[in-house]
Image 1 (cartoon, helix red, strand yellow):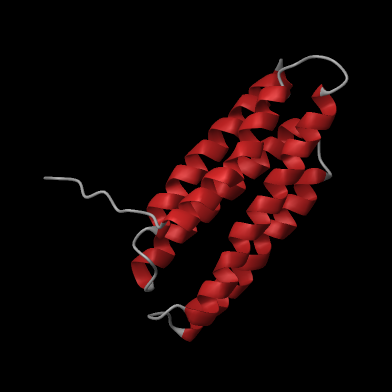
Image 2: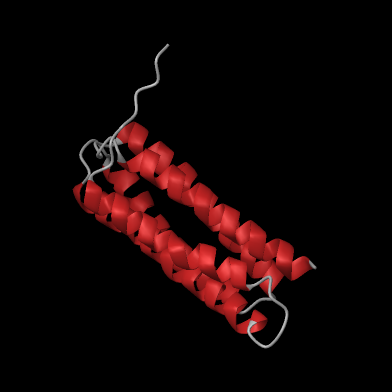
Length: 151
């Protein structure tokens, strides 16, 4: 069976790739011992919270406009859309190792809910492949930072 490659439109692709640059840069900085380690680690976690909040907000928009959802499903997506922001806010109040683990869990939970949403609603075919690639890249950066925090 031949796998079909789905082309992501240039603007969402470019913005998505630009969005992972701070993750990669800051996770790399988190490996350098010295006065910049803690600030770069916090900057990474804060950026992670911002981006997790952003992807959560997508479900608010999907709940408003996606075709094929029942009213009950719309309510679930409205409710879910605020969970990433709350999770991220609480995560920033915790030790860095816990924060990084919660961010990883948040991004993967969101991706799994995206998969369910795509199965039920009419969304662009490129959305889920883009989200998977970005989630994998963000996860790599967070895992690298987690590894640095454990050293």
